[in-house]
Image 1 (tube, rainbow, N blue to C red):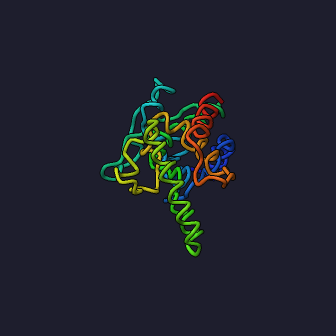
Image 2 (cartoon, rainbow, N blue to C red; image 1 turned 90 degrees about the vertical axis):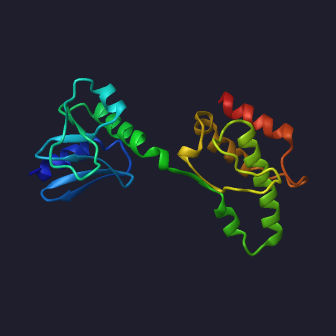
Image 3 (cartoon, rainbow, N blue to C red; image 1 turned 120 degrees about the horizontal axis):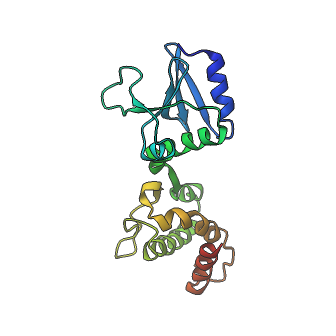
Length: 205
């Protein structure tokens, strides 16, 4: 059994992390970050699902199964020192990143079309702009798979973290924010010169 006092203590130790939740179940607790399971509190001890980063941060941690795991569930590491708030928070975040962050939705461009669905002239302009944007992402190695076909038709509008290359993870959203805030409508889409200027700005930031 894990006491409420211990659960409150772990919550306090990881209060620097947004969206942590401890779900009570059978007198124990499941640790969720952004709705994804990253570990458990079991018999007043903290266990995180086994990851390479977790073992790197705690090389001497015991790898174990504190209870009878469901089929296919990973082993855990026992976090014995929970007094170090900074290390514990880092362990929580890195466990989430390794197990779940690849699934995170980075951007769903279809939202922009849905908002403008009653205005065909806006839809046409948006389509042309996103063809330019997505082609640019592909040409500069931000995406693992081509988002626009050879005839200029958009293949994909929803992008998750695992769609991005390492450069894409760094520059996808900063470049998009510059692109979407472009307001000069004297030309249909931003010029190549302006787009390259934005790219240099986000890379040098």
